[in-house]
View 1: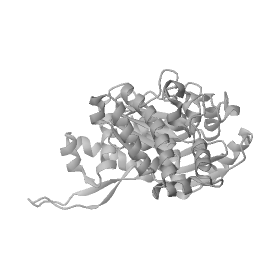
View 2: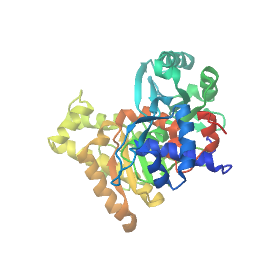
View 3: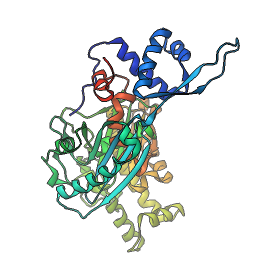
View 4: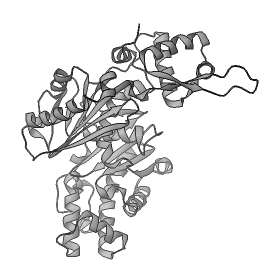
Length: 412
């Protein structure tokens, strides 16, 4: 279920408290006097809030700062305590899962990969994940910290009201399973279930290539194709949680001359099929007559500017740009981030995408939109679920005071 992040009751003290906590987290070490000056509230109000934060353990005094030019008593500096709370991020895929333990700064303290065969029963997979989480919960600092929640990223369309997967091409056996309830029953902490690409987009927005961009699109290319959309700094899910499911777009409407895409286009029904990494590497093996060619080997040939490898890359980049052109002309973002497969970080590939994009979009958006490779790579899959948990406490402009009370347990 999507949490209600609206303002709710305007309790000034609690808003000030959360804002000051964020302030110390982002700008600390900082003194009480500097907080009062920069946040523009009275020193008495700041002292009351700081005393509460110190008592709860979410900030600590870290030493003596420098006095002003006029002299006077040197101030006591305050710093945020990231180990006052923890969250878990879980990523579930067809043949593996990952579970990670994070502090309040989204720093990953433990990260465990769990391998299994495709079509392993979901109850077996969950038990494997829970075994890993149970071990992480035994760490000394975790025992003393406050649980923030669990974020779970999984491929498919999510029903946020029930915490179940409505549709999933790669994990059909998970459809309809009460995944959120299973985690909450075991750990008695709020669990957020999210589509994997949407979670990745949130990770890139908060910690990766998208930092600072209010309107951006994360284009994921891998076994399939999807997009995560950030509008005005917040993840956009759509009325039925289907926003960004661009893999179902039909390429026939974009390809007027099939000879132009002679290596990749074989009348695939969707762009997800056409732009899959398997299609690209199969085409490369056939074109270059190298039956055991890997993606790494193909990129090496591109780097050496082997003519046929470059020709294939241009075709793949052209098709990728077709998707980007539609996204830019429809949503007018300031940034498109391309991630997913290994090719997404290839500078030559990105160059071709940019060239095609600039020639196919309206002039005004063309002046503002930028294209970048994803920065987090595999880390996005686990930082995304963690960002879901920390989002409305530390990152969203809007403040969720009701959740702040519930999670932090502060005095009312």
